[in-house]
Length: 370
Image 1: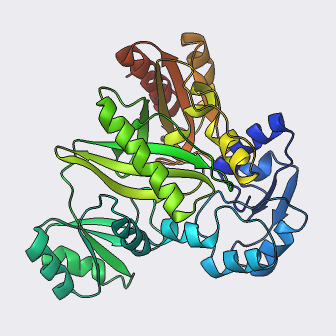
Image 2 (image 1 turned 30 degrees about the vertical axis):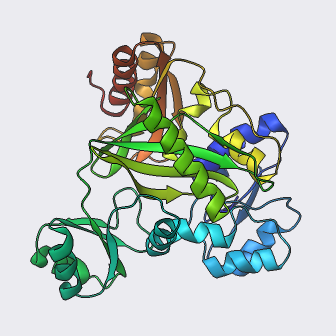
């Protein structure tokens, strides 16, 4: 696995049970996954030589992030390594403009969009689609970074001054945000997890509700069909997370990720097969596991660092207060706003389960009750 963040760390947990030896490429021995995996190669994901060294002797190569240069992924495949997902698929998660072009071509519902280079380009787009205009970095944005909601040409001017390649999208007046996680193996088997609702704050996912409460079953089935269609048409192997907006008139696809995803952390405790086990099964072309939930309601709350880094002084309270809460730490230094872990609660009543997850996350991070 190229990358040694928390996604690789949680993939290791699944690999142990499956008898799979996981090797990771880490920038430093202090990275999240490097702390818990025996076979760590130190190197730079931008170095083809380091990537080749990582891949030697491996049955498959995959990713815990999408930042590996596309040309390096192609080179690995040309060398005969099994890379999942391949470059032709992964580029759609790396380059938002390429993604929009392809999704539009296969009939997937998307917001209006256009590549832009000048303020005049943005003003022309706004004249056709109204303000505000969402400007996005074509490459490299995540967790709200690289996304700017502009209400005027002056605001757009400031963003354009950064020199980052940009695209413009129409602002979508959504009712809520949904995500669909699917898996697809090289021989074409596909499965879909239940549609979830994601709750964002300051561009960061803070909560996931599984399944999405009150979602019309027809809409849920449509969302799953859209995600499975994208996986097939783009040739995805491994996991694919499709983030969507639910609007009064239908579903609109927002973003893609081709790896384990924040919206799927709930599956570790709340599904028959976790997203991490599923990803390993998929990239190794093993039969895929059941995505069925283990409880009627599952809520995952991200644990964000607060002002007090001594989270373990509050750990005992959370465990004693609610023995059913599952806590996952990522082995990261605590910094305000940083994702350092997540908690999962399960049950039958959404309000009760949600309150339990929120209590644990807020108390761990801040030492206060919700």
